[in-house]
Image (cartoon, rainbow, N blue to C red):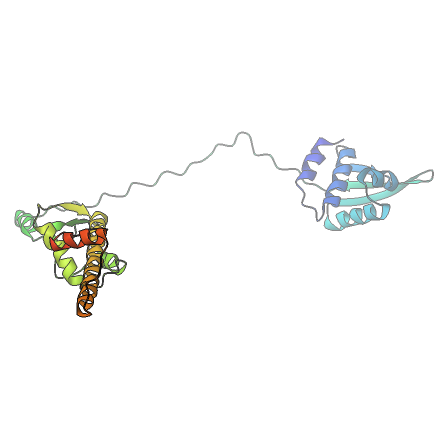
Length: 251
């Protein structure tokens, strides 16, 4: 067994697993010079290959340059094939080699420092700063900076899904004036949008209530025109009384 040639054989790239197996078998039987003897019948049973399959693998290894067929010896009725494994040893690095390090590059010079003149510093400090109406840092809104005449983009989404039939500009104007009448607040856009959605829900309920009121008033007038008064249930009479007093029942 040659540990050296077994190690070198593991590093060879054969074209098939069968060739790798045959090559390792030869390395296991090789001497220190890489010579190995092989009996086709015995080796075929060890590698689970047929005799013809083993012969094809040996021929392919010879053609690929991994093996060299030296000779064929006869021992009685048996043929003993002699092969030499062609594997180069890795060259060892010299022991006493002293590494040479290249000098580190010189650090780049620092950029020149610019000191503005006193007049320039004063001009920069007095320069007007840009201000954004209705937004600060891109995500917050000051309630007193809202424009009641223009519906912003983030508010248009709430109006789009509210289902209001009335004038959106009028509803937005009431919403903004309500918050401008209070103390100024700096809030995130998402919070203002939530407040607007709640406001639109109430507006939608008011629209439905007005539609019901007009419908009931029309039915009552039609009943009186036909010469009789419509009979109402106790709950409906109570509801009509609340409406007459200026209240808005939710039932």
